[in-house]
Length: 313
Image (tube, rainbow, N blue to C red):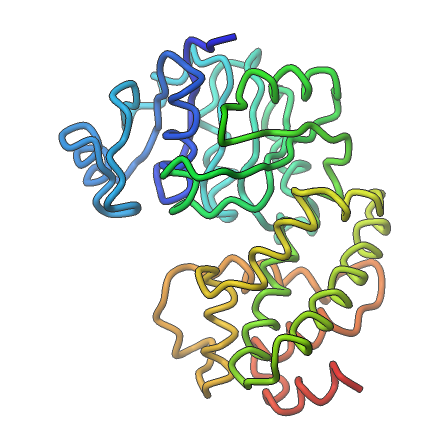
C-alpha cells in the first residue's frame, strides 16, 4: 500500500536519509526542521547541502519549519539527537498518528528509556526503529534492513509492510526494550572498539571485545525486562557489528581519537551519541566490566593503557 504522507521531525543526516527511503513508499514526505538553511537548501536544490551533501532527493520530499505540516501525516518519525526528543514530542499535534523513535540513547534526567519519555509526553502509540543503516548508504538506495518494535505487534507488522521498499527492508519484532538498549549501548561499545583499533591491537582483539560487550549488553537488557533473543536480530546484533567495525561510525572515530592521545575536552568533531549514552552506565541496574571501563576512559578517569589492560584481564 502506498502511503499518502510520511512525516519526519529532524532534517539532519539520518532524517534526510529516511526521507529518501520513504519517498519510494509514500506520495509525500514532509520533514520538519528548525534550521532555516537546511529547509532552504532542500526546497531550492533538492539536496541537504549542510547535513547530507551529494544526495539529490526525490521530488516528493519537502522541508518545512512549521510543524502544522505534520498534522495529516499517517506516521511520524522522530529523527533528532537524543537530547531533543522531549522537544520534538511537542511538534506532534495529532494523537491518532503512530510515532516512531529513531534516536539512540537514554532519558538521562529521569534514568529511563527514550520510549518511556515519549510515552510520558504523547498519547500516541510509540514505536522504535533501529538497525544497521548508515545514512550515507541508505540515502543512495543501497540495501539495508532494520527492525521496528512496538507494544502492538500487529501494528508493527502493518507499519513494517507499508514502509518497506526493495532495498530498505523493515522487519517487525516484539522487544522494544532490547532494541533500544542495543541501539544506545552499541554507540558506547563502538567507542571502546575505536580505542582498541587506535592502539593497533588487531581485529581478533576488537572482535573479542565486541562479543563480550554484546554479552554484557544482553544482561543489561534483561535487567530492564528485555529479551536475550533480540540480540540475534538485525536491529541489535547487526547494528552493533556495523557501528563497531567501521570508522564511518563517529563513535568509533572518537575512540580512536582517545587512543591517539585526545580527550573529551579536546574533541572537535561531530556529535557523539555514545558519550551521552555512557552517562547512563553508572546508574545501570546490573554490574558491568566492559561498559564501566568505557565510561571511565571517556571521562579520563583511567588512562587508555589502563583501559586496555583491564578489559583483557
